[in-house]
Length: 157
Image (cartoon, rainbow, N blue to C red; front, top):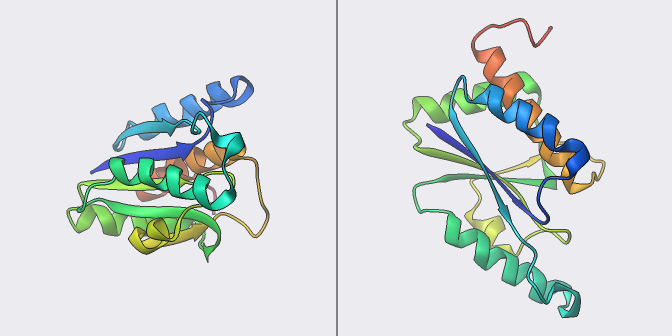
């Protein structure tokens, strides 16, 4: 199974880039993994919220294939523990999922098309975080889940 981490916005922030890349490299011990950053539209400042979400969502949907399992990160989603995330990832792997996609939408969220396409909507917290911090948390949590599945000592219960 391949894991793809997709985020709308700027490239990784230079202060967090090394940490994001470190956790991403750690995930590679377990699964093939790749970041895809969808740049903000060039004319984003002149778009209203609805237009921006629609444009970003069109770019997202070009990357998502029909048989991909899409997880949308959104504050309205379901809260799960690290152990539950590990079990969730294992279930996808056991079901012969070819690609598991974690999606961080744009600043205003995503268009309803993405909400309907997502098989799971996950909330990291009821708090709202900057996108760059969400990227770091996502990479760390996916790595943590992988280490839980292998019963490694990174995650202390």
